[in-house]
Length: 72
Image (cartoon, rainbow, N blue to C red; front, side):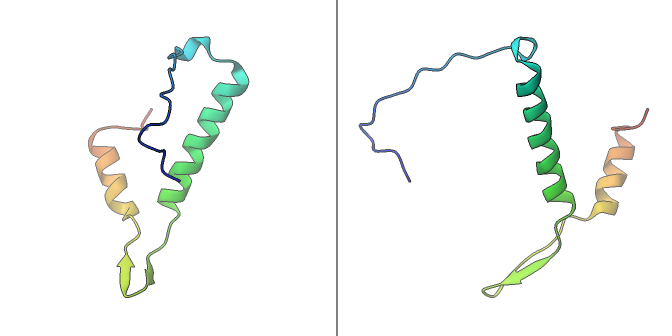
C-alpha cells in the first residue's frame, strides 16, 4: 500500500557494518544468498503473452572470469 502524501516522515540512523550484531549480519548474508539463488536458479517463464528469459549463466561465468570475480 502506498504511503499517503501527508504521512509523517520517519527519521533513521545509519549503522556501520561492524556495529551490527552477529545475528543481524547473518540475516543480511542469508537474504543476499537468497537473492542470488532466485536470480541464478530462475527459469524462462511465459504468461499473459509475455516471456521473461532466464539469466544466461554461461555469460555470467564469462563476465565473472573476465573480471576475476570469485576466483581465489
